[in-house]
Amino acid sequence: MLPGSLTPRLQEALVRLSTHIPSFVKAARELTWFTGAVVHPDTARQRTEAAGAVLVAYETTQAAHILREHPAPPCMPDTLLLSVDGAMVPLLHGQWTEVRTLAVGEVQPQSPARPARWFTPPTCPTSRAAPIVRPLASWRPANCTGAGLKAHAGSGR
Image (tube, rainbow, N blue to C red; front, side, top):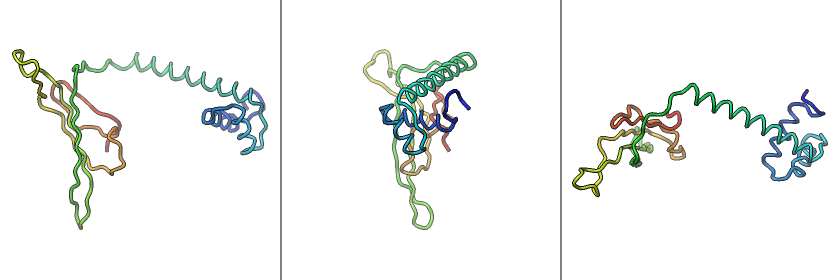
């Protein structure tokens, strides 16, 4: 048991309700309705704030660990160009699927004499067949090289 009269499961339920409902009075009332456990709104506030403090301490510790144990990210260019496109491609038996393509490149002046003209050297293209509802952020470009870029977001497929 945790300090007080709530079991760990009831305390978790109270904290979750308190974070989703913008009123400790309403969260306490909902906990009573769902579980039969009666708590005062001040208890809901105190337990939720205590749980938040524990979360902040944990996240602060984890952030410090990441900064201490992992190297700094590689130096990135000032400007990147992201180009995204999609196309429907045929599969077997009359079926179609969407393929999304992402290209990442570094934007650089074409020449010192013409600084207003920009170009992108070789990019890091990647294409993946993905359901239409799959977000772009879940991609991970493979073999992304050129201009020192190593780009990825999410776990990919």
